[in-house]
Amino acid sequence: MIRKDYLKLEFGQHKLSYLVLLIELILFIAFFMASWPNRFLQRLLILLIMIFYVLWGCVTHYKSEHLTKRIFWEYLGVSLLAGSILYLVTI
Image 1 (tube, rainbow, N blue to C red):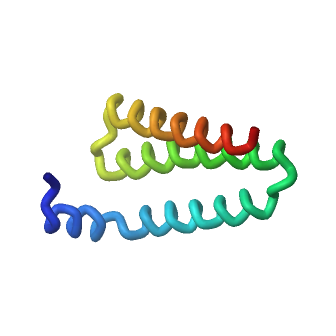
Image 2 (cartoon, rainbow, N blue to C red; image 1 turned 90 degrees about the vertical axis):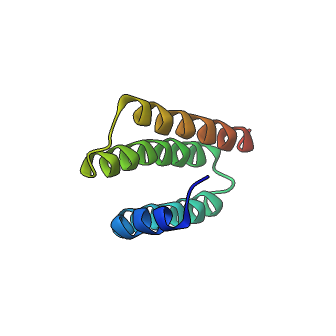
């Protein structure tokens, strides 16, 4: 179980990174919903958010000197899983 003080410390050290992620996700949701009838544009947005998420995770962990192959594969896996689910929504 993760302790609350650890989460506070982790969030406190990376406020800007999490703010960038939050803004990007909000923009993605807005553009994804706004482009509703255009499936091609929605799929392009899905691909872009997947790439952004992997790059965001790698840059954030690289800056804090915690980037490992395992972390990279975790971000890639989560990105592929979420992207696949979103892709199914556009079928």
